Length: 183
Image (cartoon, rainbow, N blue to C red; front, side, top):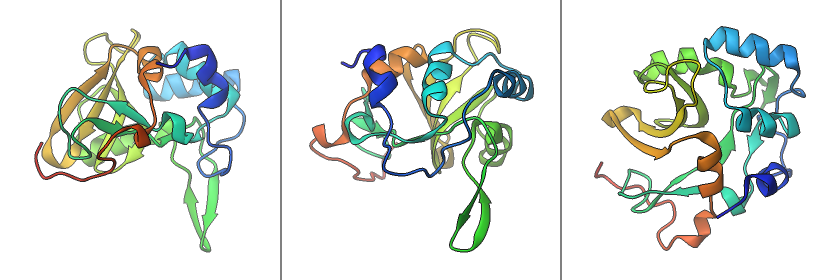
């Protein structure tokens, strides 16, 4: 089990800048919460103030599950965190927006996901998101894994901090990355 205080500095894979948004400001947080109509968890904001999105270090790129998913018999991948912003990146000569929490409303509607949910990690058709359905838009959301194509979901943690503290390395699992047909 990881401690949140340790993860603040070791969560990020700093070898790539893909998906990293500009440094997080107080105004960006206000704008994001207004656009998304939610209160973002303080643990998420602490992480995003350190680095505003991007890849997750190999030591923390999986979350154990209690049942099989389409990803694996015992975990889901968590290789990326969407930051807050709309930085455009060039990828093979094309202009494209980096993945951002701010695109959650569009992605939730496009993939038919429940609301209110704020997506944290992209790996379509599977998503990890802050799930506000039980706590309300301004409560402390749980963290849920969604498989949009099969309309299934799996609760991962009661809050974002607990989710972070449950992260581990995908390499610690015997069957990493095997896509299954069940679930």
